[in-house]
Length: 117
Image 1 (cartoon, rainbow, N blue to C red):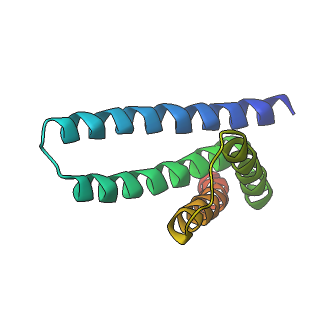
Image 2: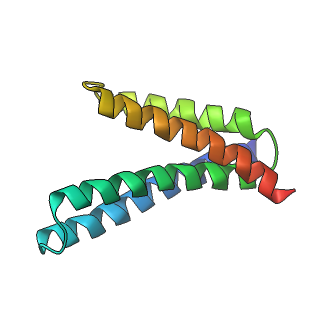
């Protein structure tokens, strides 16, 4: 149980830190007119989805078993935190990105467990 809590905590810290770093980097690029808004949105979406996949992968590699269950648990935590932070499901794009992130966490966790064997 203690290692599970450490793994989930580490994964959430990874998500928060990498999201912050990449957001800061994209903001600097956009403010200096090195990239336009459309390019920034595309890069942001790709990096965001990649971060959630890698987070699932890290969780799976740390847990070493039950990748599907651990991915679902991490996804449930992500859903709860998103709702607490006030994420509003106003249009289909937001819903699609949200579901994509959840699926990538689960897939990453399954693959992460199998990479360790």
